[in-house]
Length: 416
Image (tube, rainbow, N blue to C red; front, side, top):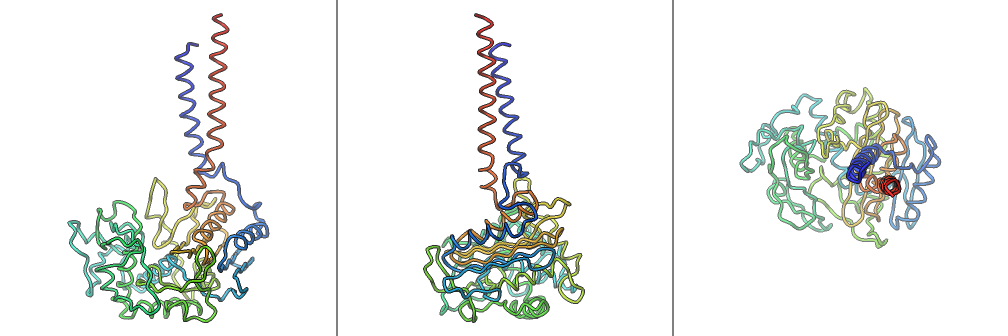
């Protein structure tokens, strides 16, 4: 075998091995779960250690197995947090807002594929050169309406007056401080782009169709119906037994208000998130959405890098072994609010984590739960998936290099 052929074979083997590593990596082959399969106690021990050692603020975690409580963890400087302690939910608010929209669909008052402008009288989408008729309810729910705002909502102090919905839609205050416009920036339906502005518009939609304030509609149709007595949209500090607001160094800081209830303003306890999750697992006949609409919320609509990542108001975290999808929603607000909910509809299992005082631990524990539940990596664990590929890639490349060197050595010996 000549040198050129050896080099070409080495290059081909390298490319093939990298392909194998990447494909296997996104299937979770190189990742290790934090607990043995079906060992809930071991998973809880892992989560407890992380929360107690890494969260200087407050945290609540509830584990559900087969639709029944299986464990709980509470962390706070004063030891006062329990399942009824309310936390700021951040973008987990969008999940509840989507459920509210689907309630109007169930009532026959909204059509998912109707242009949203059909229902609006108080505000209209700006003319940006695209056909605004492509902005449908379905696309707003799934972040595929063509909005390019990428909007995270800025904080307001307790004593600041909040803008009206129409004022926020016309001139939103972004957390980045950059000037943001809510409207179509790419062809509706052409791609997935996360949009806080979509949910501000959906908040207005709920008000226009129901003829109630968004907060009152959600209270009547979701919180009251599902016995979620520790949920609402008032200022966090006005609730008794609230978690407060902590920076990542453990400093207690004032809680904030937000200009969009639907996108980021929800205040909720871990027990109420569990009730909300269980309603979507059991789809009770007496309350909530029909089983068909609950399932419709996790049908894939948004895709990125070839992966299904978003349904109608739900994040799609990973496939289940039986072909369903783990779903739920996360939330994060500066400086250190992080929330996570994951539901496995195949097993009736769920995880709820609410945190203030750490910017990412709730989502990280949620991702570990998904891997432990399904064997597949969580869609939010992209960095961990890439990190898991490094060692097998290097070992494989070393093996290929060693074999190429051996072939060249044997060739040189044969020619000597």
